[in-house]
Length: 78
Image (cartoon, rainbow, N blue to C red; front, side, top):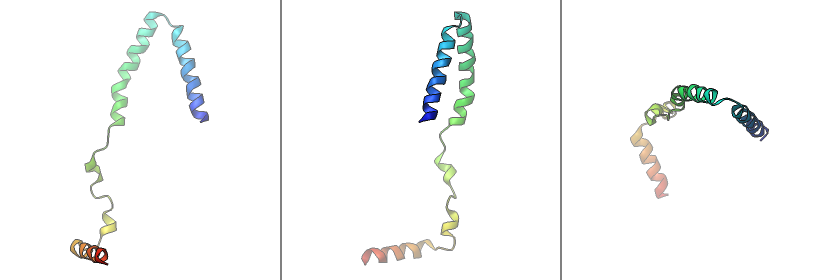
């Protein structure tokens, strides 16, 4: 919670500093900030489901799929 308050205070301080800038400096700031957006959004890409391939592979090592399914079906029948 304290980090959020500090972030809010920092944001407010930045906004107050921006208000003191000349229109030309504000435009320069906006240009620099928007120029950084593409490189930052690339880091926030959504992972692909394909990246999960092979995850948990070791858990199933030595387990035959048909035998596992038969065992589960037997458990359902009681």
